[in-house]
Image (tube, rainbow, N blue to C red; front, top):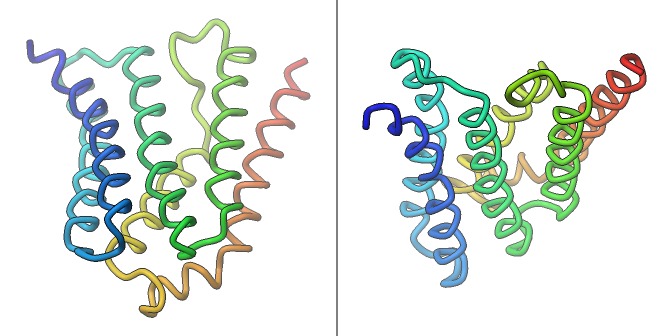
Length: 175
């Protein structure tokens, strides 16, 4: 029973993605609800792996669930924010491409590994993703933090292009 706590925390992000979409469907009112959803999602991501390791139940399938839950939540939130014109659509598209490439590379390159292969840029990408979601949840444009996020969107895009190129280079290097 305790072994399922980390997976339950990861799976919670699927429900939080659905909640975000429902909140967005009713307009940008009630930013407190968006902030709570974003903080719960980030918190569950922060502790699920730690709990799994502490309980001795960390697994490759748990790491896959964690990554897929993360990207599902982040993409749901950021596509909603792009639809509300808070950020350009190319940001969630690049995140989706980057994660897809990471997942494919994990299967192709890391065929001997039980879970997704580690990525330094992928780790920082996760931090950037949750920072974007939390910022836009709390203070979307025209508030200053949201306006800053929108202004630095091209730099964020460059980061994801670099992550994609890093994965391509790793794939080329291992062939």
